[in-house]
Image 1 (cartoon, rainbow, N blue to C red):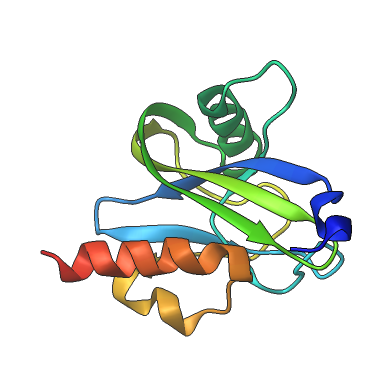
Image 2 (tube, helix red, strand yellow):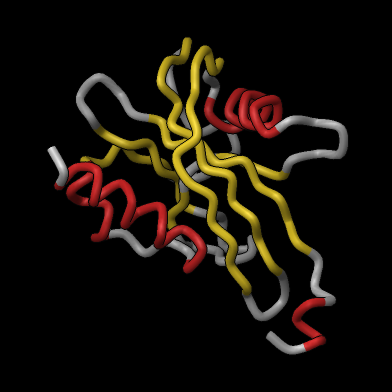
Amino acid sequence: MSEADSQLPTVHVAVGVIENDNGEIFIAQRLPEQHQGGKWEFPGGKVEPGESVQQALARELKEECNIEVEDCAPLTVVEHQYQDKRVLLDVWWVLKYRGEAKQLEGQQWLWVDIAQLDAFQFPDANQPIVERLVDTLNSY
């Protein structure tokens, strides 16, 4: 990493892996004008100052997906360097939630079988999450 890269801001993001009763995972397509626009992602958003990761996850999933997180557990942490910024993804399994998941921010969304996740184009920072989920499926 160059000195210029180390000067880039790090964006801390709470990410939720939401699984339904059929074992499918909720994903949404980023809007074209967003960073990595058009690619698919797991829902979540920036952790605000003074907010815990769990609080950010609950807030973001309520705002984006219409669900209230009742229980979650850490899945993985991903650090990734893009050309223009660094991201720290705090990824959590959403183990229990209330409400019917749907996308509230105008994005396309799908419930996808874990085995089919690699058919979708995700931002580079999300690849380790996809790999972790597929590995989890293969370990059963």
